[in-house]
Image (tube, rainbow over all chains, first blue to last red; front, side):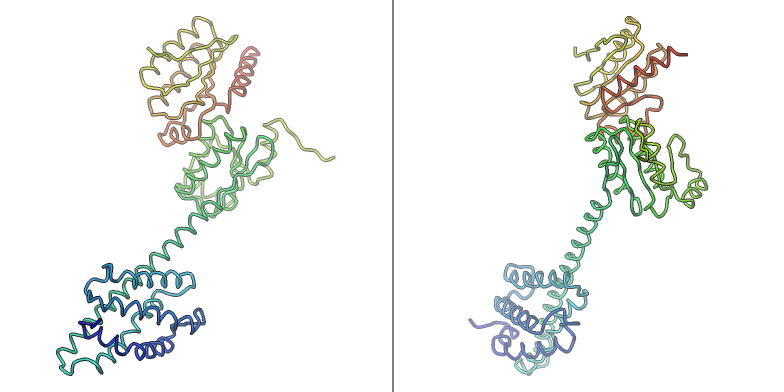
Amino acid sequence: MAAKSTLGTALQKRRADIQTMWQRQLAVQGGSAKGRVSTEELDKQAQQFLRAFEAAVLSDKLEDVNGPEWAEVRGFLEDLSRKRVLAGFSSDETATFVFSLKRPIFDVLREEGSKDADRLASDIWEATVLLDKLGMHTVKTFQKAREEVIGRQQQELLELSTPVVKLWDGILALPMIGTLDSARTQVVMESLLQRIVETESQIAIIDITGVPTVDTLVAQHLLKTVTALRLMGADCIISGVRPQIAQTIVHLGLDLQGVTTKANLADALAVALKRTGASISKA
Amino acid sequence: MDRIPILRMGGFLLVTIQVDMHDQLAVVLQEDLTNAIDKHGSKGVLIDISALEMVDSFIGRMISDISGMARILDAKTVVVGMQPAVAITLVELGLSLTGVATALNVERGMEYLRRALEDGHGV
């Protein structure tokens, strides 16, 4: 198949040269940065990309990199971005993979292309626009892959941070760790209420030892949880109130009346046991 | 027309809400219940809402109102078996039902009423 564009012709004729030059370029620019990708792996990726790139260029649809002709190239770049996200590359390091191809291609175009300066300039312009688009696509997928990772971690964190533990027959405890926001409180509240129904527990102890700060919003969330618990017919004790938090609560003018608060979990458990009519004694 | 049955059990009245509450039903229930308290001279009312999956502010108010009316007629009210989703909805609506006694299930609710009655006699 004869290529219509100068870029296509140059690629067909000098692919091996371009590849060698590119590989050198990648090595110089630290494409294999800090040994996260081996040189062999990088060479293989370069080879794969060039093959797909050539096929796409020969289709003569240079303007539209979103078209079906470029699907393979896009797929390869997406795959590459995803791998690099997991390997801990930064976005510029990932984009450099594509951008470093400019130098070899421009060199070859200068050697192979038209001696007419206008023609050469337009060929180079065409190539640079094309590579820029591919580079942008790589960065876009890189960003997206990274956001996916963050989203997944957030979800995991949310699930990890809401264990409801059974302390005694009819007594549940909920150790809260980390900052409380609306989304987390919602999850916490739901799982606690659900467990109350399942275990038919009368008393829930919310331990806030692991909550760094309490502001009006956090206090409001806590009070909501306490009210919901009361509506269901269970009692609630808040434990682990540190001196600073007690001060903040008073300074903020929050009303925690009607809520039993204790300094630590042990005191809270003692009260809970008393209310359920159970007792522990040394043998 | 639909009515929510009110069962008499000794000195107590038992109301089990098994259908979706709508406003008309709630109004009729209020009327029936106050009449029943008066007629039987009941000292306690137990409202089981464990099958209730949806509430709005009107139903929330109604529960609170029934409790208030019963109190004036010298009967204690206990609401039992509220579902988590219902509890969260009521809290979000800003209805904390202060003054309404609650219990986890019918058994606990009955226990509460019995104890409340004994305390009442003691005074």
